[in-house]
Every structure is written in C-alpha cells, then in structure tokens.
Image 1 (cartoon, rainbow, N blue to C red):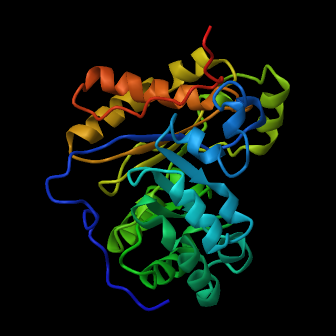
Image 2: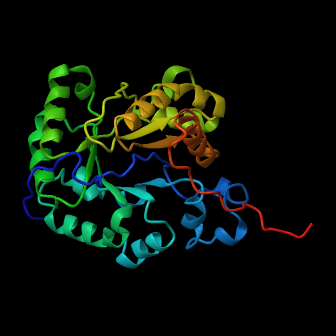
Length: 302
C-alpha cells in the first residue's frame, strides 16, 4: 500500500445525489431462508446473492474475514447485484487479529485487488478489531489507515471497553478516525442483553456476542450500524425505535446510512431489514424504495 492523504468524510458523495438508506443482514445465505426468502431455483450457491439482493440492498461481508476471495468469485457477486447494492467487506483476520495491522502490505494488496470487480458496490472496508485493541494502539491504526488508497472508504469497529467508558479514549479514536475520513461502526447489543435468553439460539449468542455500550454518533456522511435484536421479531422492532429516529435525522442531514439487522437465529433477518427500511420511509416518503423481492415460490398457473 502507498501512503494516502487524509480523506474528506464527503469525498465519495456525488454532487447533488440524494441520501439513501441501505439495509441488510450478516449474510446473504441461510438455511432457513430457502423457500421463504429464496425460491428453489435461487437456492444454488451461485444464485443466492441474487435472491437476497431483491430483499436487501446491503450485506455484511463476513466471509472475507476467513479468506480473501478470488477475483472471479467477487466478479460473480457483482453480476448478481445492482450498482447501488453495498458490500461492507471485513478485512481478513490475518490483518486485524493475527498481525494487528502491522507488516500487512502484501495481504492488503491482494485483498483490495480481489475486491476491485465490486466497483461502486464496495461501500466500505470494514476494520473489525479484537477486544484487546486498546487506546494505546490507536497510533498504529492511524498509520494503517493512512496507507490505504484514497478511493476506499474505511469503517472501524472496536470492542475494548475503554473506548465506550473513558471520554478521553473516545475522543482519541474519534479524532484519529476524523483525520482519515473513517467511520466508527457501533454494534448495538443493548436490546439483546436487556433480558435473559429464551431460546437455544439466544443462549448461544448470549455466550458469544460482545456486551457493547450504546453509541449513536456518526463521524462521516456514510454511518454504518450493526444492530442485534432478539428471536422475537416484535422485541427486535421495539429495540430499534431509537435507530429509526436517528436514521431519519441522518438522512435529513444529507447522510446515507447503512443498518444491518442481526438476530440470534437470523431466521427473519431479511424481512426485518426491509421492515426497518419501510418504517423509515413511512416517515420520509421521498426515500428511494427497496427493490421488489423475487418470488420465494415458483409461479404456477393455478
């Protein structure tokens, strides 16, 4: 990677382009979605994203954390999605967790080259850092971000408690991200941890998901939020009310936010993501609608 200048938070916003709301899930394929959100013809691995993209207009790229995909694979993702679809692609774990952003030029060149076929669909490069990444490590993060190409937006997720409880650590990170035009991704798990788990999936998530303090501030014109609800859809909806209000405020300010809906079993996640978009659009009718979902069942004459 070559050193890059600090990026303006609005550098990638087209002149006069209206703000948009992108919504999505943690994945584009789930066993329980077949026959419910994906029809049998779209259940094949090379077509699942196409079906998902008729429900949502964004997705978390979690698979890239485990391995950098080939350009051919990424090109197939581009073919299955419209240009206004957005991927938030997580950096490989060798970059963030194993080498902790140090001596990773070769890995980053390979990663960014592989993602090139996405073109404008790459909404952000997602730097998810381990819980051990502390305020003392922020300098290394800035050096890493400054070396990324100016053409790539970056969004950072931290999990060390000090960033949420120590105002000095919070300001340190905000100022550091501001110098390179990077966003801070909050992972809102407050609704999930409000009450004890009630299902096997919730009990599993209770042991694995981080207990994150609530953060609602945006640093750039493209804020990104990860929200974890419950397996009961209505409890999930109840918990995101604040995000509807915050999202409306961002849109009215000219920002284009992205919100990802998680639940412990993710069985209804695509429908919930659409419901969030619908709730925002009901209060802001000028917002562009989502695409019409492809039929989940084959069409018949009778």
